[in-house]
Image 1: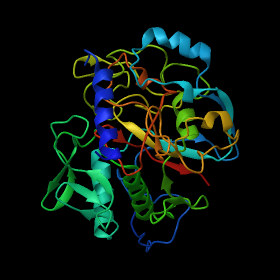
Image 2: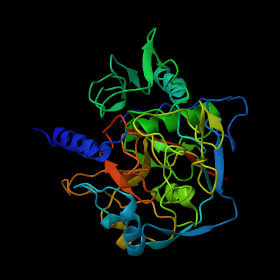
Image 3: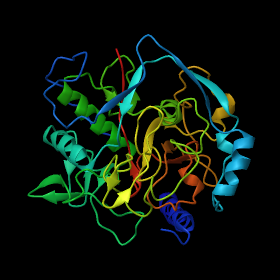
Image 4: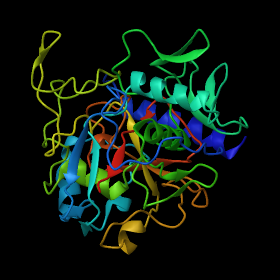
Length: 364
């Protein structure tokens, strides 16, 4: 049995416990001259963005969890055998000096299908029978397969007339089944559409920090956008119920906004910055390699992860993985995996039904 298959089988068992009784390719150069700001003619292709650190400003916050917070949260969550929180400590002061914005919502099926269709047309990706892959077929960018295994099921994308498309009634749900590499391809293609300079070299996965295009947030940027300087369990506070989050399925992004929806009076689940759905629905890829002990060695200014990653416990420490944050729709409302400080990870070539992302961009 391969290591990847062992990881998938083990993660399936983890998800079942969490549920409880409750609910790299060649970059095609853009023909557009890089601009300072996205084109105003892009319509709904670009997710709505929220400035988190304004140009000329810096932000400082306490990242991770304290022992006291974890002890207090233990009464509200149901741990399992893999519920490890050692990698959230020590809590440490982080200063962000790079101005950035982040998507108010997770990338939706409709947005993803539109942008990745362009990547396919440009030869940056290939549409197969059950996946969008890199041109060599070596890496899956997004799975399109339907599966009886909830961990591997594609929920919102279909192939229609030889084109990738959002499934009916799933257009505004968060995209799922995306690998880390798939998120990079999407970000580059979106940048090209916007007339911005793509930030990623898709051959080696490197990040050009001088480019002004769309990208994944770093883990620190993600956590600050989710919590600001608050010390809440979740992005909006310490209470978690069915008025702020639905377990077992995705919903349209921003569904829980404090209005009445489908007969339910929702409670807004936005972060202090007005960023929605930072808890649940899909785990969100971040740029960083995962490091189990990285917080103990964390640079205090603009951290972006270790040089190479390891695996989260209890897996093989020699397997490099990339960070997920935010929790997924398969987690029950009692799951500690939904806490805003919870860290999780997978190999960048991996995809699961719970993996999606939101974009960020460095501001000029």
